[in-house]
Every structure is written in structure tokens, then in C-alpha cells.
Length: 74
Image 1 (cartoon, rainbow, N blue to C red):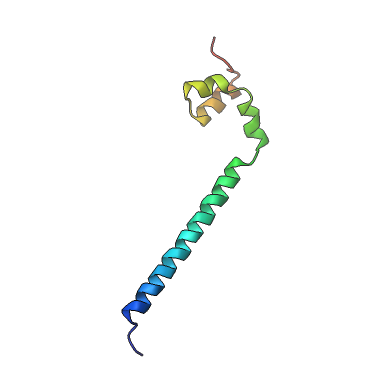
Image 2: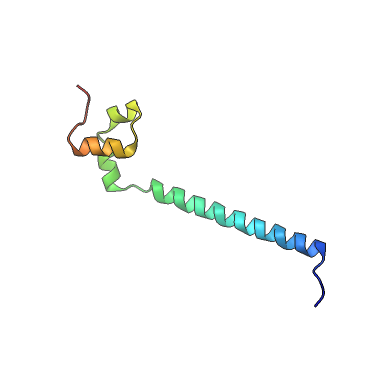
């Protein structure tokens, strides 16, 4: 069997890179769409976590405070 030419190797490499980039773009889009879906559990927290969000607390910490009944600072 004959050795592949350099041009053929470059062509195959470029095609592989393009298809990989397309798959990564599709995956990123799917991930973004799945995180932006309206989840009733998340909406429940968003309705009352305004003070905690203003302070810059991470989402798990905000959820824990709300679960404990701490909705505002006083």
C-alpha cells in the first residue's frame, strides 16, 4: 500500500478539526439550553434570594439559607 501524501494528511486533519469543533459547538449549545430551562425548583429560590444574590453568595449557599428560612438580612 502506498504512503499517504502530505496534502491528503493535511486535508484529513483539517476535516477532523472542523468536525470536532462542530461537535463541541453543538454540545455547548445543548448545555446552555438545558441550564436555561425553567425549573420549578430553581424558580422557587429565585423568587426569594434577592438579598443573598446582591451579596454575591453562590447558588448552593443561597439555597441552604432559604431552606433554613433565612430570606433577608435583619
